[in-house]
Every structure is written in structure tokens, then in C-alpha cells.
Image (cartoon, rainbow, N blue to C red; front, side):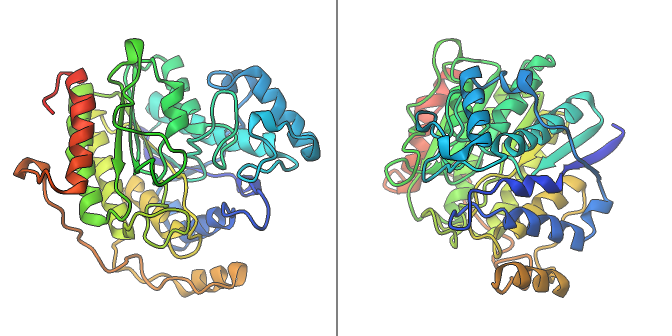
Length: 390
């Protein structure tokens, strides 16, 4: 390895902007980058701006007619074709949409290439993780599915086993759909139950099809799940699957919208638990994939208090310089955050819950507990298909 970690960043990704009333405010990206810089983490890793994903790369996942529709909407937002999910409330069309979406996708593809080549062990693109975009349509604030494109590029380069771990509060439906019948990609998504949250998919019975049967795994968590339950579910499912699958690369998506302050969902997870899962993904990549780890952002709509802190922790872990939870946030960053948003920023890099405790699945489960019922449903549906005991 020539270096430990790479941060993918191009200031132009902040142009991914659906407008002033849309919850996906690009200020969350700008504030994360400023906080990473405030802690000096960019001095611990190479900061790289990759080129935008080109047509041939986008076609690894997306249909040509859809790419053409995005280009047309990008040039003429008023004429966006709604049949492709463009120009909707969730995905308003805006000038330059194709270019900035391709740029974000390019950062994730570049991250995957750098990790696969062995230039670095870890690469982070917190602007990425746009996991809802489908091969033929926009969905859920996502135009191009950079996570799927990064995985498809790894397969193109010769990877035979790629594990995708998605801990966004919303189901990673677009990535699951892209590799539904592909046994080379194991997709694992932990998310709020589809009964109570978009996109209403990600039931435990969704396990893949054809040659890919058993390569999709879904943990549908009850609304209100907090730190102990979230971490219990993660550790009851993910490590055992990765131990069986033996991935060559781990791609993880770290949407920050599981947080109890997030306005669009109903889990009750703290920043400290998010950090604990980031640490776990890092450790699992080293245990099962020779350290090859591509880490992406995702959702997250508490754009001052939660997202910058969560993804700065992610960057620090990847860089080998984790930020201690009790660390005080630099006052200069808090002034910047207020100037940009008129919101008061947080004081420390913790919600006061570190270290987070949780009960191991191996110690036994309670069949009357809703969280344990969710985990057991997943294990019963998916584990036997991989030769594992439920």
C-alpha cells in the first residue's frame, strides 16, 4: 500500500442542489468538509478530485435512455420527463444536474479504483451513497447510483466478491436491484421497517433471485429502535455473513439519517452509535477484505448538528486518526456553521453516549422482543441460503 487513505472531494459536488426548500441541503457537504479540515484530517490522507463518471461508466448500471433523460433535464429543467422520476417533488430537475451527479459518481468510482489497485487501503466519498437511483429512473433524492457504479467498476476490474453494507435509515433498494441476480455482490441493508418508511421495500424475505438467491439480506428495524438495538442487529447479522462470504472489498454506506434528530425518519440512534458502526465496518474490512474499504455518505437531514460530525468521524477512522468523542469542536467551525445556516452548531463530537453498550446475539434472544423478532426474521430468511444456521 502506498498510503492509508484517500478522501474524495471536489468543491463542485456542492452543486448537487435541489433547491432551497428541499431537505437534501448541500450545506451538509460543505460543513463536513470544513470540519474535516478544522481537525486537520486532510493532512492525514490524500485529498483527490476524481473525474466525472463518463457515459460508458454510467452504463455499467444505468440504461442509456435514462442517462439521455437526465442530460435533457439538466439542459432544460422545465422539460424534465417525469416518467423517469425527474422533475418530481423528491427529485426536482435543475440546471447542471447530469454533470454534478456524474461528478459525485466519479468520486465513488475513483475511490473503488484506488482501493482495488492498492494505492490506498481506504477511500471515503461522503458526497456519495446515493443508493435509491435505479437503472432506469431517479428516486429518493438520487439521480445516479454511485454506490452501484463503484461496485460495478470493481467487478469490471476483476473483483469476484464485493460486500455492500448499508446502514442508512432507508433501504438500499437501488443497489439491491442492480445486483439482484449477481452472486458476486452481497448486499446487506439495515433500515427502518418498510411499513413506516420510504421506499417501502427491504423486507427480510427479499433475498435475491436466480444465481443471486441469498446474496441480498435485509434487516427491517422497528420504528423507535435506539443505540443498543441498532448495534445488536448489526452485530447479529453483518460479521457472520462477511465471515462466510469473504469479500475482497467492503463498500459501506453511512447515511446519518438513523439519528434521533433526523426529521425524515423514526429511528433513535445517536452519533456515538453511528461512530461505533463506522469503527466496526473498518475492523470488518481488515478482518475479511485485507483492509480494502470504500466508505460512502448517504442520507442525513439534520445538516448542522448531525451530518458533519458523523461523516467527520468516518473520515477520521479511515485516516487512522479517529476523533475522540469527547473532543471539543473548534469555535471557528461553529461560527462558519452559523454564518451559513443561522443554526447553532454542536459543542462536542459526541451525544454523550460513548461508549455505547449492546447485548450480543450469541448470549440469547427474546422471542417477544420486536427488535429480536426483526433480527430472527432476517436470519431465518437469508442465512440458510448461505449455509448458515438461523
